[in-house]
Structure formats: structure tokens, C-alpha cells
Image 1 (cartoon, rainbow, N blue to C red):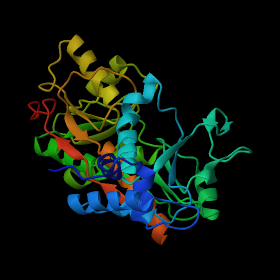
Image 2: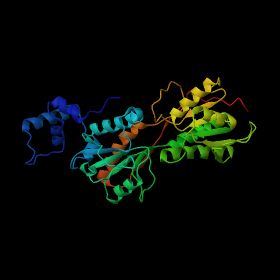
Image 3: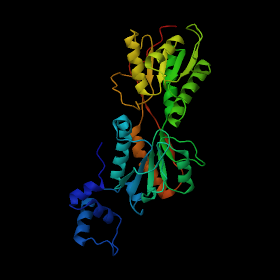
Image 4: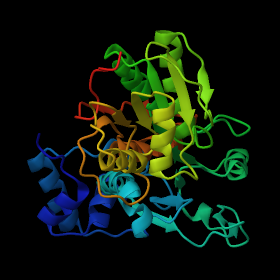
Length: 358
């Protein structure tokens, strides 16, 4: 597919700055903006020769004050701990903003409350930008409510529950992807399944366990059992949908709990936990996926070397970043509360196999 021409391309071919190209496209000719006639004609000639069409996002922002989009992150995105997880979101945001001829302003000076970042403080600069993109596993509900109440344009990268009013967002369809993978496992004969992870808190987590619960209830007719400390013995034919919280447990302890419950497939909320469980299982001589299947529900949120071909899904992180910029510009132009969920890509890896323990 041919790459779309950008204002930077036109500027390079015309030998001018991107700002000059933007001024010519927007027909700025007032007293404050002076462009030599021969310069204007040179830019227009390149536009005619290339057939360049202005990016719709850039056109939406043509009348805005600053052409600056803010980015606020509730977690540090540059340290090694989170760089791999947030990097694709930031790439998507940067690419789409650059195509639209916008600058990005990363807000880093917000005050912290209880060790957590907050948008609003005495020195808050959020209004310097035309609108703001919000990143983080969980967002502060008081911040969201104030942004909505004060009419400050923003879009959350990630689905968010209402905060006194609907929140504009672009998210991933985690519930649909988790439901599809759970149903696939059941179709392969698995009747004792475990969801390993927090299962509560962030909307992305809640969506995942909702997809798991809906699939097991519909396909197996069983309710969710939350973290049985001493699972009762069960025959292989009994159906079980178990929620096992991984926090505070080693991979070996998680494996012990799965074995005690007779689980044949575990769906790990965080791919980092999936890696640890696989390594612990193989250290015990267990065959993965022959004796225990593992499904990874997305990307690892903490640094871990993933050298396993997991069955699971791929989050559309870069596309979410790009789409967030587009939704923010639509909101700036038309108002409203845009809300979108993008499909996750299902991955047919090698860690889910038919259940041979029936």
C-alpha cells in the first residue's frame, strides 16, 4: 500500500517548512502571516503535481489555537518496567499526530496523591493543549469527573466506566477475545478451566473475566468459583470455572492450586504470569499443553522474556493510539462522546491442545 503523503513530504519537496505548508493549505494571508507569492506558488505547484489531499484530522484542527495535543500518563511510560507495554500506544499516537501536523505535549509535572499521579494540581497545565489523551491501566475517577464537568476535551486510551457522565474512549474488545478463546478451549474438551489474575479493578481486567464467565456459564452451565483455598476432589467429568488470584502467589503455588482443582486449561490475565506458569510446569516435568494448556490474554505488563508461542490474543495497541488521536480531533470539531472498541487479533499458538484427561 502506498504511504499517504504528509505535510512534511510537501514541505521537503517545496523546500519550505511544514508550518509554511500548513499556512498555505489553510489560505492564511492576514497581516500577521506573510508568505512571499513565489513561495506560496511553489507550495501549491507541489500540491498539484503530487495530488496531495490534506489529512482530515489536520483539517479538523486547522482553526484550533495551538495544534497541540496533550498526553497524560498515570504511570511512568519510559522506565524499563513499563516501556515495552506502553511503547506501541505512544508510537500510534505519535504517528497519527505527525501525519496531522500536530505537536504532542507530555504532561509530567502533575502532582501525586498517595504516590499516584493526578491531572489537576496547583500547577496543572492541561489547558495548554487543545485536548488531551489519557494513558494508564486505571484512571482517577475524580480526574475524569472534573474533566467532564469543566468541558476539557479528552479521550481515554482504554475503555472507562462512566464518571458522572459517559467517558470518551477507544479501547480493546477484551471481553469478546477472552470469550472466544474460552469457547475454543471448551470445544477442545476442556471442562475444568481457571482464570488466573486479579479479575477486578481496571476495566480491562473486568472485561476479560466477564468474557470468561459468560463463556463458561453458557457452554458449561457452571458458575464462577472464586479462589477455592482447598478445592474439593472432583472427577474429570465435573465442570469447573475457577478464578484464581495470582497476586501474592508464586508460580509454583499457582500451579499447586491448578493441580488440586484438576484444571486442564488456565487463562492468564497477564502474559508474564503465563510465562511463569509454563516454566514452573516444565520444571516439574509437566507437558504443556499435553497435561496443562495455557492461554495468554494479551501482552505482559511487566518486563519478561517471552520465548513461548502462546495461544491467546494480540492487543491492537498501536491502532488504539492512532484512533485516539482521530477521536480527539472529531470531539474537538463536533463535540459528543465517542466510544469505540477495536477487535483483538486471536493467535493460534502452541499452548492450547485438546483435553486428553476426560
